[in-house]
Length: 214
Image 1 (cartoon, rainbow, N blue to C red):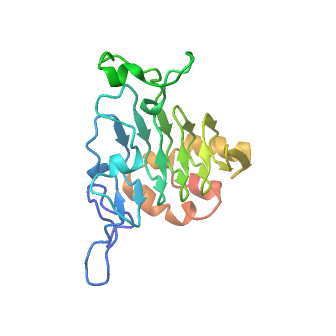
Image 2: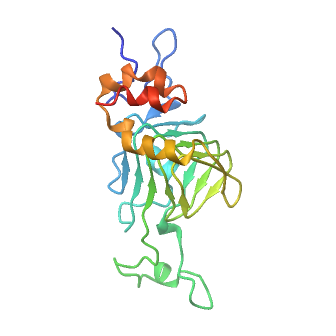
Image 3: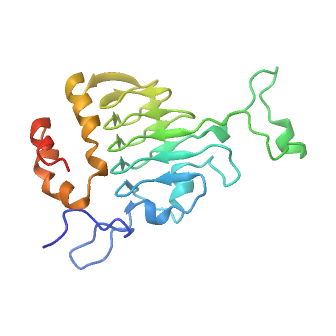
C-alpha cells in the first residue's frame, strides 16, 4: 500500500511521470544543515528557481555565527519568494546614525548583535507567495499568511493574515474549535494515524478528526 505521506527523509517528494524529481519543491529538513535553522518533518518549500542552498534562499541574513534561531514546525507549506528576515539583519537604532561602524572597522566583537530574537513558525502553517517574515515574529499553528504579507509580532493560532503590516483577516475556526485542534496536535501523531485521518484533515469537521486521536 503506498504511503499517503512523502518519506520525511527524502528531499524531493514529487516527480515527473518518467520518475525525474521535481527539484523546485523540496522537503526542507533533509536539506537544511544550518546550525541556527530548525525545521520539522514534512515541511516543504517551493521555488521556480530552486537554489543549491535553501537555508540562504529562505533566510539570507541568518549566518552560522548569528545569535538567533529560525524555528519552523512540521507540515508547513512555504511558497515561492517567501523570506525570513531574521534578527541578524537589524542595526542599532539608538544613535544618531544606524550605520554599523563596528562591522566595517573590525571592532565588532563576537558578541556584537543588537537584536537576538528568535523567529518561530508553528506547525501546519501556509506561507503564501512572496510573504516576508520579520525578526522576532511568532506565527501560531495552523495560520495562513497571505501572498505578499509582511509579518511582525504575534500571529494567533489558525488566523488568516494579509497585508503590510499583516493584520488578522479572520480566524479559520471558532475559538472553541481552535482549542480542540490545539489539544489534538495532529501534527505529532504517528504517520499511520495521520494517514488514516486524511479525509478528516481535508475537511473542517473537528469532531471527525477527534475520532482518530491516538
